[in-house]
Length: 201
Image 1 (cartoon, rainbow, N blue to C red):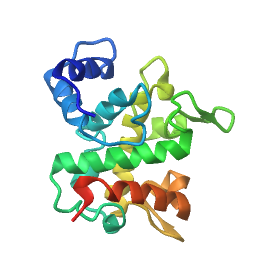
Image 2 (cartoon, helix red, strand yellow):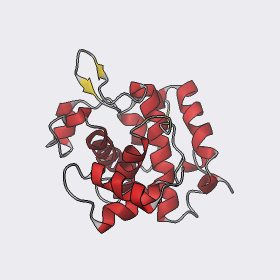
Image 3 (spheres, rainbow, N blue to C red):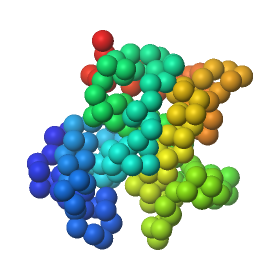
């Protein structure tokens, strides 16, 4: 979904909240505009994708630098991909996961409000992992939720060296997000990510 540079700068401005876009956020927005996600139908899609790309440069950078042992199930071309390609993969994967967690609703609340936002993150877990929750809407803010998810997942994937692991030995993203432990949902997300240009070999 190509964007003009002006639109990309607008996305970056939204991503940064009330501040002006920096050159770095503008670049991330422009690059992210070429990524295919499962939230592309949402009006917030460009903002969320740009936020995820930016998070993969900071909170989630270990996701990009790690080659999980089970990556071929999700993205056969990942090991040979450059940094931008790897960021595209992780953004696509989390867009699929968000569909199962919240049906892409940033205001989704599970278990009576215990789990919040796009990726249904528990505030206690967010604070434990050191997520920045300074936005007035906290985890109900899409970019805040996506940055926090990147931070949590990066630590798990770097530690476990897997995207999901296997039954009885779940790790990586599956450690914190139950849909990745469900065979049908996991297969659906993997089918989507394998279809990405960067994942084809």
